[in-house]
Length: 64
Image (cartoon, rainbow, N blue to C red; front, side, top):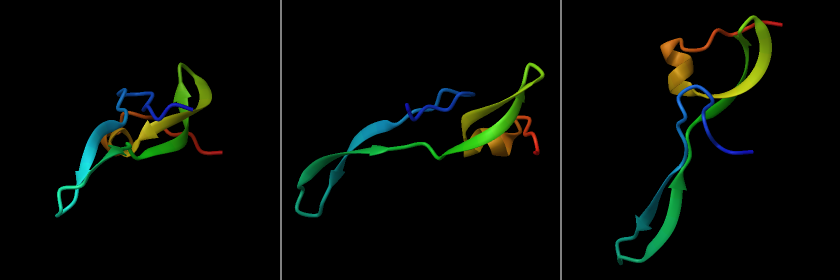
């Protein structure tokens, strides 16, 4: 499953680790995604949302 927020489209960023000895290795920074039951167009669906969207209130959560 892709690590992409279904609300804002945030996805992993690719970069490099650089050690003190300047050894360079590839790495990626993944977004903090959470599986949330949300109300979308009147239906309850489980979506993957980043925590910044949850905190901003862009998602209407549904309780069981």
